[in-house]
Length: 319
Image (cartoon, rainbow, N blue to C red; front, side, top):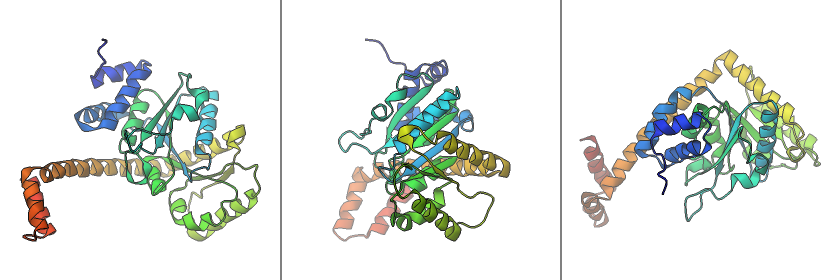
Protein backbone atom coordinates (compact mmCIF):
# COMPACT_ATOMS: atom_id res chain seq x y z
CA UNK A 1 0.00 0.00 0.00
CA UNK A 2 1.46 3.39 -1.04
CA UNK A 3 1.70 5.89 1.81
CA UNK A 4 -0.01 9.18 1.05
CA UNK A 5 2.05 12.27 1.79
CA UNK A 6 0.71 14.27 4.73
CA UNK A 7 3.51 16.79 5.31
CA UNK A 8 2.13 20.21 4.25
CA UNK A 9 5.62 21.47 3.34
CA UNK A 10 6.20 18.59 0.92
CA UNK A 11 2.65 18.79 -0.41
CA UNK A 12 2.99 22.50 -1.15
CA UNK A 13 6.28 21.91 -2.96
CA UNK A 14 4.60 19.20 -5.02
CA UNK A 15 1.60 21.45 -5.71
CA UNK A 16 3.89 24.22 -6.95
CA UNK A 17 5.56 21.67 -9.22
CA UNK A 18 2.21 20.89 -10.83
CA UNK A 19 0.99 17.91 -8.78
CA UNK A 20 -2.79 18.30 -8.82
CA UNK A 21 -3.36 15.57 -6.24
CA UNK A 22 -1.15 17.54 -3.83
CA UNK A 23 -3.35 20.61 -4.34
CA UNK A 24 -6.44 18.51 -3.64
CA UNK A 25 -4.91 17.12 -0.44
CA UNK A 26 -3.95 20.57 0.82
CA UNK A 27 -7.51 21.80 0.26
CA UNK A 28 -8.85 18.72 2.05
CA UNK A 29 -6.61 19.59 4.99
CA UNK A 30 -8.02 23.10 5.32
CA UNK A 31 -11.55 21.74 4.96
CA UNK A 32 -11.00 19.34 7.85
CA UNK A 33 -9.56 22.06 10.07
CA UNK A 34 -7.42 21.48 13.13
CA UNK A 35 -3.64 21.64 13.40
CA UNK A 36 -2.93 20.58 9.79
CA UNK A 37 -5.15 23.41 8.52
CA UNK A 38 -3.15 25.86 10.59
CA UNK A 39 0.09 24.50 9.16
CA UNK A 40 -1.21 24.92 5.60
CA UNK A 41 -2.41 28.43 6.39
CA UNK A 42 1.01 29.49 7.66
CA UNK A 43 2.66 28.15 4.50
CA UNK A 44 0.24 29.73 2.05
CA UNK A 45 -0.38 33.08 3.78
CA UNK A 46 2.37 34.85 1.77
CA UNK A 47 0.29 34.03 -1.35
CA UNK A 48 -2.81 35.75 0.06
CA UNK A 49 -2.47 38.76 -2.25
CA UNK A 50 -1.22 36.93 -5.33
CA UNK A 51 -4.58 35.85 -6.71
CA UNK A 52 -7.55 37.79 -8.00
CA UNK A 53 -10.65 36.42 -6.23
CA UNK A 54 -13.86 36.74 -8.23
CA UNK A 55 -17.16 35.70 -6.67
CA UNK A 56 -20.21 34.72 -8.70
CA UNK A 57 -23.56 34.60 -6.96
CA UNK A 58 -27.26 34.88 -7.72
CA UNK A 59 -30.46 32.90 -7.45
CA UNK A 60 -30.46 29.17 -8.24
CA UNK A 61 -31.07 28.67 -11.95
CA UNK A 62 -29.52 31.98 -12.97
CA UNK A 63 -26.81 30.13 -14.87
CA UNK A 64 -23.86 30.77 -12.57
CA UNK A 65 -22.14 27.51 -13.45
CA UNK A 66 -22.57 28.10 -17.17
CA UNK A 67 -21.24 31.64 -16.79
CA UNK A 68 -18.30 30.35 -14.73
CA UNK A 69 -17.59 27.79 -17.45
CA UNK A 70 -17.61 30.56 -20.06
CA UNK A 71 -15.25 32.75 -18.04
CA UNK A 72 -12.84 29.85 -17.50
CA UNK A 73 -12.70 29.36 -21.26
CA UNK A 74 -12.10 33.08 -21.77
CA UNK A 75 -9.20 33.13 -19.30
CA UNK A 76 -7.67 30.02 -20.83
CA UNK A 77 -7.94 31.53 -24.33
CA UNK A 78 -5.69 34.29 -22.99
CA UNK A 79 -3.16 31.65 -21.96
CA UNK A 80 -3.63 32.17 -18.21
CA UNK A 81 -4.27 29.59 -15.50
CA UNK A 82 -7.51 29.69 -13.55
CA UNK A 83 -9.08 27.82 -10.63
CA UNK A 84 -12.69 27.39 -9.57
CA UNK A 85 -14.06 26.82 -6.08
CA UNK A 86 -17.66 25.66 -6.49
CA UNK A 87 -19.40 26.08 -3.14
CA UNK A 88 -22.16 23.47 -3.00
CA UNK A 89 -24.83 22.45 -0.50
CA UNK A 90 -23.70 19.74 1.91
CA UNK A 91 -25.05 16.25 1.73
CA UNK A 92 -27.09 15.61 4.90
CA UNK A 93 -25.51 12.14 5.06
CA UNK A 94 -21.80 12.72 4.36
CA UNK A 95 -21.32 16.51 4.67
CA UNK A 96 -19.80 16.33 1.19
CA UNK A 97 -20.69 18.55 -1.76
CA UNK A 98 -23.72 17.14 -3.57
CA UNK A 99 -23.32 19.05 -6.84
CA UNK A 100 -20.39 17.71 -8.85
CA UNK A 101 -18.14 20.39 -10.29
CA UNK A 102 -16.91 18.19 -13.13
CA UNK A 103 -20.48 17.35 -14.07
CA UNK A 104 -21.09 21.06 -14.63
CA UNK A 105 -17.71 21.93 -16.16
CA UNK A 106 -16.70 18.90 -18.19
CA UNK A 107 -15.07 21.08 -20.84
CA UNK A 108 -12.12 21.80 -18.54
CA UNK A 109 -11.79 18.58 -16.54
CA UNK A 110 -8.64 17.47 -18.40
CA UNK A 111 -7.04 20.91 -18.81
CA UNK A 112 -3.88 21.19 -16.68
CA UNK A 113 -4.32 24.98 -16.67
CA UNK A 114 -7.65 24.68 -14.85
CA UNK A 115 -8.24 23.38 -11.34
CA UNK A 116 -11.85 22.86 -10.24
CA UNK A 117 -12.89 21.88 -6.75
CA UNK A 118 -16.33 21.47 -5.16
CA UNK A 119 -16.48 22.47 -1.52
CA UNK A 120 -19.35 21.59 0.78
CA UNK A 121 -20.95 24.34 2.84
CA UNK A 122 -21.16 21.96 5.84
CA UNK A 123 -24.11 23.94 7.13
CA UNK A 124 -22.38 27.31 7.12
CA UNK A 125 -24.83 30.22 7.05
CA UNK A 126 -25.00 31.70 3.56
CA UNK A 127 -23.55 28.69 1.80
CA UNK A 128 -19.84 29.50 1.99
CA UNK A 129 -17.56 26.87 3.48
CA UNK A 130 -15.45 28.16 6.36
CA UNK A 131 -12.32 26.95 4.56
CA UNK A 132 -12.94 28.90 1.35
CA UNK A 133 -10.39 31.70 1.97
CA UNK A 134 -7.73 29.17 2.92
CA UNK A 135 -8.49 27.04 -0.15
CA UNK A 136 -8.14 30.14 -2.33
CA UNK A 137 -4.69 30.76 -0.82
CA UNK A 138 -3.66 27.18 -1.58
CA UNK A 139 -4.61 27.76 -5.21
CA UNK A 140 -2.78 31.08 -5.32
CA UNK A 141 0.33 29.47 -3.85
CA UNK A 142 0.07 26.68 -6.42
CA UNK A 143 0.24 29.21 -9.23
CA UNK A 144 -3.35 30.07 -10.12
CA UNK A 145 -3.54 33.88 -10.44
CA UNK A 146 -7.32 33.87 -10.88
CA UNK A 147 -9.74 32.06 -8.58
CA UNK A 148 -13.46 32.03 -9.39
CA UNK A 149 -15.67 31.35 -6.34
CA UNK A 150 -19.10 30.20 -7.45
CA UNK A 151 -21.76 29.89 -4.77
CA UNK A 152 -24.98 27.95 -4.50
CA UNK A 153 -26.79 31.28 -4.12
CA UNK A 154 -29.10 30.82 -1.16
CA UNK A 155 -29.74 32.50 2.17
CA UNK A 156 -27.13 35.08 3.11
CA UNK A 157 -24.74 33.88 0.40
CA UNK A 158 -24.55 37.28 -1.30
CA UNK A 159 -23.10 38.85 1.82
CA UNK A 160 -20.81 35.87 2.38
CA UNK A 161 -19.36 35.94 -1.13
CA UNK A 162 -18.74 39.68 -0.91
CA UNK A 163 -16.63 39.03 2.15
CA UNK A 164 -14.56 36.36 0.40
CA UNK A 165 -14.00 37.98 -3.00
CA UNK A 166 -12.26 41.02 -4.45
CA UNK A 167 -14.98 41.45 -7.07
CA UNK A 168 -18.53 40.14 -6.72
CA UNK A 169 -20.52 39.36 -9.87
CA UNK A 170 -24.29 39.06 -9.32
CA UNK A 171 -26.04 37.02 -12.00
CA UNK A 172 -29.69 37.71 -12.85
CA UNK A 173 -32.05 36.67 -15.64
CA UNK A 174 -34.74 38.29 -17.79
CA UNK A 175 -38.12 37.88 -16.17
CA UNK A 176 -36.65 38.54 -12.76
CA UNK A 177 -39.58 40.89 -12.14
CA UNK A 178 -40.66 41.48 -8.55
CA UNK A 179 -37.63 39.58 -7.29
CA UNK A 180 -35.68 42.79 -7.93
CA UNK A 181 -37.58 44.49 -5.15
CA UNK A 182 -37.45 41.43 -2.91
CA UNK A 183 -33.69 41.13 -3.22
CA UNK A 184 -32.56 44.69 -3.85
CA UNK A 185 -31.01 45.35 -0.44
CA UNK A 186 -28.70 42.36 -0.44
CA UNK A 187 -27.83 42.60 -4.12
CA UNK A 188 -27.07 46.28 -4.10
CA UNK A 189 -24.86 45.91 -1.06
CA UNK A 190 -22.61 43.29 -2.62
CA UNK A 191 -22.72 43.67 -6.40
CA UNK A 192 -19.63 45.09 -8.10
CA UNK A 193 -20.82 43.88 -11.50
CA UNK A 194 -24.29 42.78 -12.64
CA UNK A 195 -24.59 40.19 -15.40
CA UNK A 196 -27.93 39.64 -17.11
CA UNK A 197 -27.49 36.05 -18.27
CA UNK A 198 -29.77 34.31 -20.79
CA UNK A 199 -30.01 37.65 -22.57
CA UNK A 200 -31.62 35.98 -25.59
CA UNK A 201 -34.87 35.69 -23.64
CA UNK A 202 -37.66 38.29 -23.59
CA UNK A 203 -37.49 40.88 -20.82
CA UNK A 204 -33.84 41.93 -21.02
CA UNK A 205 -34.67 45.63 -21.40
CA UNK A 206 -37.03 45.48 -18.43
CA UNK A 207 -34.57 43.90 -16.02
CA UNK A 208 -31.84 46.27 -17.23
CA UNK A 209 -34.14 49.21 -16.56
CA UNK A 210 -35.09 47.88 -13.11
CA UNK A 211 -31.46 47.43 -12.13
CA UNK A 212 -30.58 50.95 -13.28
CA UNK A 213 -33.50 52.33 -11.28
CA UNK A 214 -32.38 50.41 -8.20
CA UNK A 215 -28.87 51.80 -8.54
CA UNK A 216 -30.24 55.34 -8.98
CA UNK A 217 -32.37 55.07 -5.84
CA UNK A 218 -30.23 53.10 -3.47
CA UNK A 219 -26.57 53.51 -4.39
CA UNK A 220 -24.91 56.74 -3.33
CA UNK A 221 -23.00 58.54 -6.08
CA UNK A 222 -19.37 57.50 -6.05
CA UNK A 223 -16.39 56.59 -8.16
CA UNK A 224 -17.73 53.11 -8.95
CA UNK A 225 -21.22 52.33 -10.23
CA UNK A 226 -21.77 48.61 -10.86
CA UNK A 227 -21.98 48.08 -14.63
CA UNK A 228 -24.75 45.93 -16.09
CA UNK A 229 -23.48 43.48 -18.70
CA UNK A 230 -25.52 41.15 -20.90
CA UNK A 231 -24.43 37.60 -21.71
CA UNK A 232 -25.66 34.33 -23.17
CA UNK A 233 -23.33 32.00 -21.33
CA UNK A 234 -24.77 28.83 -22.85
CA UNK A 235 -23.57 30.07 -26.25
CA UNK A 236 -20.36 31.62 -24.95
CA UNK A 237 -21.52 35.13 -25.81
CA UNK A 238 -20.54 38.09 -23.67
CA UNK A 239 -17.41 36.66 -22.04
CA UNK A 240 -15.17 39.52 -23.16
CA UNK A 241 -17.62 42.16 -21.93
CA UNK A 242 -18.03 40.48 -18.53
CA UNK A 243 -14.28 40.11 -18.12
CA UNK A 244 -13.69 43.72 -19.16
CA UNK A 245 -16.07 44.83 -16.40
CA UNK A 246 -14.25 42.63 -13.85
CA UNK A 247 -10.87 44.01 -14.96
CA UNK A 248 -12.17 47.57 -14.76
CA UNK A 249 -13.39 47.01 -11.23
CA UNK A 250 -10.04 45.61 -10.12
CA UNK A 251 -8.18 48.54 -11.70
CA UNK A 252 -10.53 50.91 -9.87
CA UNK A 253 -9.88 49.16 -6.55
CA UNK A 254 -6.12 49.28 -6.99
CA UNK A 255 -6.21 52.96 -7.94
CA UNK A 256 -8.42 54.00 -5.02
CA UNK A 257 -6.91 51.73 -2.38
CA UNK A 258 -10.17 49.82 -2.02
CA UNK A 259 -8.47 46.50 -2.81
CA UNK A 260 -6.09 46.92 0.14
CA UNK A 261 -9.00 47.89 2.38
CA UNK A 262 -10.99 44.83 1.36
CA UNK A 263 -8.02 42.56 1.92
CA UNK A 264 -7.45 44.05 5.38
CA UNK A 265 -11.11 43.61 6.26
CA UNK A 266 -11.00 40.01 5.03
CA UNK A 267 -7.91 39.27 7.12
CA UNK A 268 -9.52 40.73 10.25
CA UNK A 269 -12.70 38.72 9.65
CA UNK A 270 -10.70 35.52 9.24
CA UNK A 271 -8.78 36.10 12.48
CA UNK A 272 -12.05 36.79 14.28
CA UNK A 273 -13.64 33.65 12.84
CA UNK A 274 -10.70 31.48 13.88
CA UNK A 275 -10.83 32.87 17.43
CA UNK A 276 -14.60 32.36 17.66
CA UNK A 277 -14.40 28.81 16.31
CA UNK A 278 -11.56 27.92 18.67
CA UNK A 279 -13.43 29.25 21.70
CA UNK A 280 -16.61 27.52 20.55
CA UNK A 281 -14.82 24.17 20.24
CA UNK A 282 -13.40 24.50 23.76
CA UNK A 283 -16.81 25.52 25.13
CA UNK A 284 -18.51 22.54 23.47
CA UNK A 285 -15.88 20.22 24.94
CA UNK A 286 -16.59 21.64 28.41
CA UNK A 287 -20.34 21.32 27.92
CA UNK A 288 -19.89 17.68 26.91
CA UNK A 289 -17.79 16.94 29.99
CA UNK A 290 -19.15 15.63 33.28
CA UNK A 291 -19.10 19.15 34.71
CA UNK A 292 -21.06 20.44 31.73
CA UNK A 293 -23.63 17.69 32.04
CA UNK A 294 -24.03 18.49 35.74
CA UNK A 295 -24.53 22.18 34.98
CA UNK A 296 -27.12 21.38 32.32
CA UNK A 297 -28.94 19.12 34.78
CA UNK A 298 -29.05 21.95 37.33
CA UNK A 299 -30.53 24.28 34.69
CA UNK A 300 -33.11 21.64 33.84
CA UNK A 301 -34.20 21.13 37.44
CA UNK A 302 -34.32 24.87 38.10
CA UNK A 303 -31.41 25.07 40.52
CA UNK A 304 -29.66 27.67 38.38
CA UNK A 305 -30.54 29.69 35.29
CA UNK A 306 -28.85 29.34 31.86
CA UNK A 307 -26.87 32.57 32.31
CA UNK A 308 -25.35 31.33 35.54
CA UNK A 309 -24.39 28.03 33.90
CA UNK A 310 -22.89 29.84 30.93
CA UNK A 311 -20.95 32.09 33.27
CA UNK A 312 -19.39 29.04 34.92
CA UNK A 313 -18.34 27.67 31.52
CA UNK A 314 -16.88 31.03 30.52
CA UNK A 315 -14.89 31.32 33.74
CA UNK A 316 -13.47 27.86 33.10
CA UNK A 317 -12.47 28.96 29.60
CA UNK A 318 -10.65 31.97 31.03
CA UNK A 319 -8.78 29.87 33.57
